[in-house]
Image 1 (cartoon, rainbow, N blue to C red):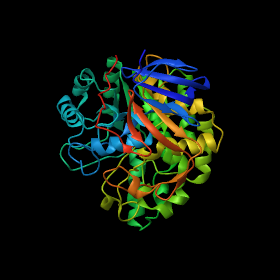
Image 2 (cartoon, rainbow, N blue to C red; image 1 turned 90 degrees about the horizontal axis):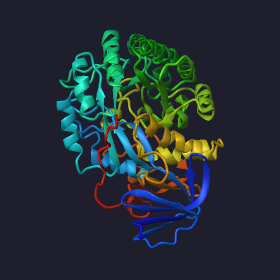
Image 3 (cartoon, helix red, strand yellow; image 1 turned 135 degrees about the vertical axis):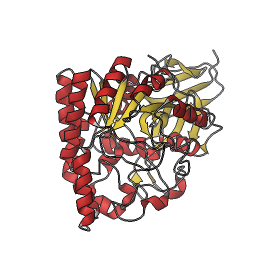
Length: 452
C-alpha cells in the first residue's frame, strides 16, 4: 500500500499508555499502526523524541462571526487553534450576532463558516427564555449540544444572548431530555453576583481582588446545585462548563454517584493563573467565573490529578483590545487562550505534576469526543480520523504577541515561558500547522456531523 502520510519514530499516546510505533494515514483516516511501517508514502514525518497525540477536541470556543467578526472570525480563530494543537471544536451560541437561538440564525453561522476553518467544527444551540419551541429545529439541523447561562447576562442589543430564568430552564431541560440532547450550563448565582457587583462599584472597590470577591465560590456551588436539581427532575443530560472550584466539583461527583448524567469541564486559565497574579496582568485575565486565589487553585489541581474533572476546554472568548481597558469591572470578561492550551497544560500537569500522559490525552481529546458523540475523533486508533498533534517536551518558548494568530493579538499569557511545544498539527491527515512554516495550506475544516 502507498500511504498518504506516515508518522515514524514517535512516542504515540494511546489510552492505555505510550508506545513507539509508526502511524500510516490513508484517505484522511488512520489506516495502520505498527512498529515499523515500510510501505511507501507521499509524505513521511519523523517524530523522533516527540509525543504523538490525538488533537484537542475543544468543546468551548467563542467565534464572533457573523455580527462581531472584529472580535474574532472563523479564519483567525481556527488558525490559532491549529497552532495550539486543536483539531476539532464546538462553537458557542454567543457572541455572534444574532445569537444561535433558532435554525435561521444557525444557518447564518453555517454559511459564514464555509471554507474558513483550518480545523473541523460544530455548533451549539442556545437556550434562552423565548426559544423553547425552537430547540427541536436546531437539534434536527445538527447542533451538537445546547448552552444556557444561569449567571446574569443581559444586553440591549437586538439578537444578543440572554440568561434563563428558572421556568425556562425547567421547560428547556424537559424538551432537551425529550430530544436526547445535552445541556451545557454556565453556573453562577445571578442575583448574588449582580448585587455584589453593584455594591462594589458603588463603593469604588474595583481591584482585581475585589472582582474575585464579587463572584465568590459559593455562588458557583449554588448554581451547580440548582442545575443538578433540575436535571434530576427532568432527566436532562447535563454538562457544567468552566468550573473553577473544588467545592462545585464535589457537588457534581455526589450527583453522579446518585445517578445524575452529569459531566464537568475546567479550563487552563484556572490552573495556570491565580487571582493574586491577575492584579499584575490586569483585565486580559478577567473571566467568569473569576480566576481563583492560590489556595483554592491548589484544591482544583487536586481534583484534576485525582481524575474528577472530565475534560479541559479553552473557553476562548476574545474581543477587541479597547474592550479590555478600564478597571476589572468595566472590562470585557473573557480570555483569549486557545493557541496555548495544550502545551501550557502539558507543561503544568504532565511535566510539573506527574500526570500520566495518557490521562492528559483523555482530558483534551477522548472524553469530550465520547460525550459529544464524535465517533471518529479523540483517539489514535485504526479507522479514526487522522487528527494528530506532535508535541516536543524538550522545547521551550515564550508567548509573544507577534506570534498569536488571533484577530486581536493579545493574551493573558504574554511573556510566559512554556516548557514544551506543539510542532505540528494534522487534521484528517493534512498538516495545517508546522512550527517552522506556520499555518500550512488553505482551510480544510469540515462540519462535524451530529450522530444521534
